[in-house]
Image 1: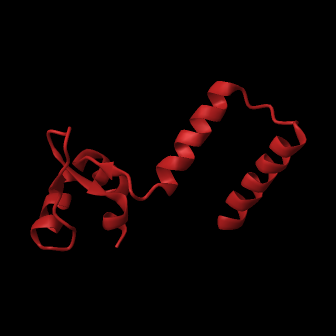
Image 2: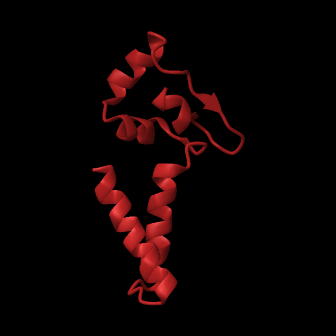
Image 3: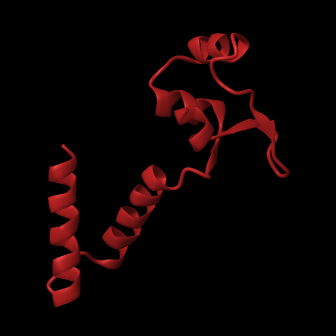
Length: 91
């Protein structure tokens, strides 16, 4: 699967470098946002997003936090709810 992803990205870069890309500004923006979503592990997420990222229910998430298998959320300035770092959730 990683080879498939690599081939797609290498092809995209080659098209961009040669000026043959058929991506418009909106498509490019969406692609950048999607790539950031999967590569920016410092990004903080809500419980809902954390559950989606891990593929578990909120009840299971709460149980894992209570048991110490997942870190407790932190309060961030400007946010009403707790948030988690994606990097912390992967460990």
